[in-house]
Length: 158
Image 1 (spheres, rainbow, N blue to C red):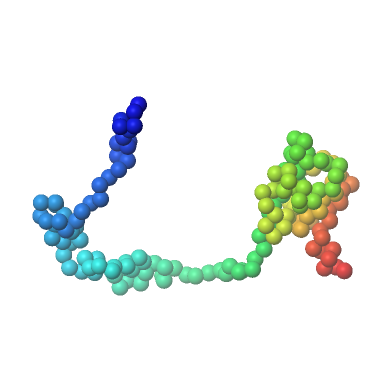
Image 2: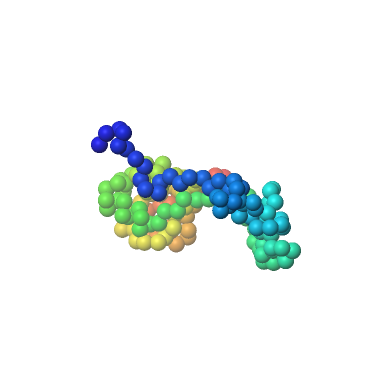
């Protein structure tokens, strides 16, 4: 292959359709816009307009509310932690902090904190320090002789 033999793939480039360039082009006179009416003129914005009929976005009810300052937590399940311990990515004997979970790759980023949930099964007692935890997760860890510390709750209690 030489430089002068290089070509685009078939169909990679299409010529721009030139409208309103005479009757021989097949798109002359009205340039494919029909005759008269709003959409034949320039400056048309018809998004959501239904010709005077009540538009769909106004016919449907509006419900709910999105809290502007809602906190978003990264979620970790007990089963995931056990899987990472079995794989040797997390040291089960050391204290498990949020930074350790991020460093191991179990959580991509902390967001507003990490929340521990009880899905899956844990086999060993661990000391876990996270922003939040479900009651079931705390009970499951404590049943195995571990401990779940919630720094935000501890600070609020003082």
